[in-house]
Length: 251
Image 1 (cartoon, rainbow, N blue to C red):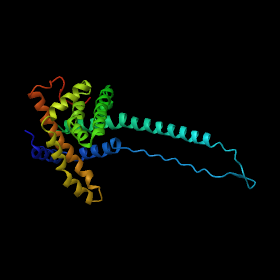
Image 2: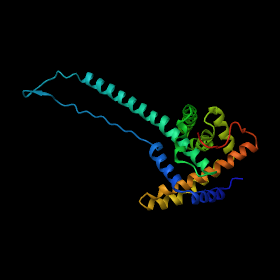
Image 3: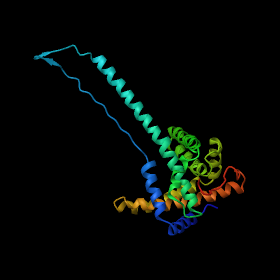
Image 4: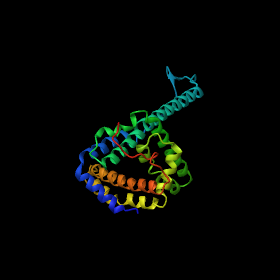
């Protein structure tokens, strides 16, 4: 059964064995794979142009406006391209690598370099496809109402772990397995998220720096949660050992 308290207790035990490497992984993952925002603003002032004290009416306002619009569109496209590149080639693989690290760390003291697991041996393509499939599905459901988007985010919560375990798995199959894993436990996952709010509030009181030290605890606890869901998937046979091959030493 879903044992939130047990997951968190096991997470604490793992951190007593090895804390600073998980902390460093969370710190670097936050810096490299955290949310990035871009903002741009453009403004123009149109005024009277004088030459020798007299008004020069030769300025083509329509042409100027069109130029500004074209420049704005180009800037927007460049910003969009950069944002997508950061998401695809930085946030997605770093996120999967972080999940891989914490799953390996359950079984043995794991090397920091596992964070970059997604960049090796042709894994990047499958990771990008899987993570993108989750992102746009959650986004589209969020357009309907906020609640459906939240439900979908919990439904696909295990996809990064599945990709960390098997980056070559078919994208739709990864989504299907995550749906089955979280069936009946989405509310439990939400409650588990809420259970860390007190820790984050305490971290915030310490000039927000304390939240950095809470993150490894959260990640180790959810790694325990995924292990439970993984075992359920194999036991109930809605996933196979070929699809979920485990977390052997990273290559």
